[in-house]
View (cartoon, rainbow, N blue to C red):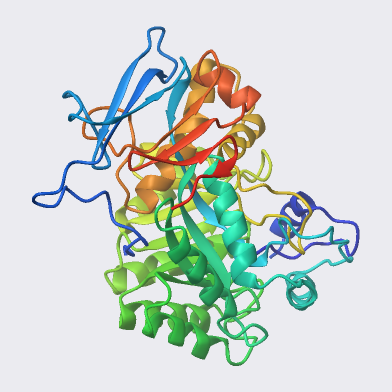
Length: 436
């Protein structure tokens, strides 16, 4: 999940990310868009009255019919919910999260010193065995919490290694099924312990893809951690090609090492015609590139249909989203690990993550704050192949209601999410799930 660190003790997640960086498809989601009304079945309709879309001065009604917003009148008998003048905003997409590792909701865990990927992976195993709550329940608890904070979809990375077998994939899969009414989920089989350096991992990746348990297979620092650039990528891309799944590779390597790995990923994506099915996460070799070199690399990524994700760890490691998007590179925003063995921090709140993106980017103007929100709402949606939500007729009826003045103020102040709506149904109210 994170790279090497030069220090051995006392590191936060940010410290690990910053320190390590100095070293060296499209898949189907768990639930489909809202279905049209079956013949003879009354339309499922709800009117959300007295709401202000994006903070408009005058309130209006949002009418949801069978999961989509409509401009027409609501069918007879539609449920009516008074928004009380609250602001309606699209729900967000978490493009990179590790729900299998979490201790969210568990008794406090005191973390041990660690200073490398291998050491942190060992801590993952210790925490996995120490926690009494089954993984599937912990994952569902965290993913459900994400829903209450306004997340409508996520790409979930689940560790795959002999130490866990496929428990992470199975646990996140169980949570996905139980939350399918509220959340779209893609699952990545993630080889945190390395693909080549840990015998047995490639077989587990193959099994996860072959059985249809995952939507993507992952990789991690082919040079800096696995020390097997060609062998790792041959395994990962071979599995993707054989089983028709996507790829999402963690790449923390910086400078020439990271660029060498990234260009090898681009070459394999083109060779296997996997355009649109490959994502590279973190990509610490991209921030700080000179303008001309960044533009050239962005053009290559766009031509190969490769998307990127960032978790906004710091000002020097966050991806230059606007410049990449200008070249046609899709960039998603994610929350990464949440209260796991790597760090006590994280909360699976994508509005807060968009706030952090604005913070590390030194956003000041309203349009800069709004752009950070759109990165969390739209960037991940494009990454996962989901329709964007713009609160206009024909848009998915996926939105949240909050009290506030305007979008920039909401991003800064992070008010409570009073109501979360998925496909026209209220799925969370006042921070609690409302049921199936």
